[in-house]
Length: 167
Image (cartoon, rainbow, N blue to C red):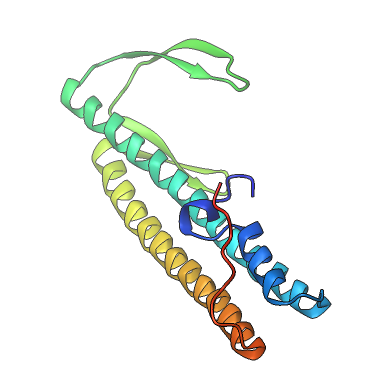
């Protein structure tokens, strides 16, 4: 997997696939399809959760910047803005009492710093709830994988899973 997060959560796609193949000596197209579907489903959930974590980190970073602005109370702010592809330009913000916050889908809203902090708190809570839900979903998927492996083991009369070398 390309950093999708399954390595952090337990079995990787190759370990799960090798366990399924080790249990069933003859390749079974239905089994491979099920294996692929479940592992793909798990990867999608973990990737989505990683994106939610990235969004949450950006909002927390914005909160820190706003809190520093409130403490310093500068009338003007000199900064560099990334125009894209790491091309930065110097700029002056003449009024630091208001800020534009990205709401999503290309919409921005001008808010006072206090309003922005309230928005960030609400958004952070929603993103945290979503990440918790995605974590529970990934745990359920892993439980399904484990149940599938246990069921196959019982059907074939194996005592334990074959040991897979950990590299």
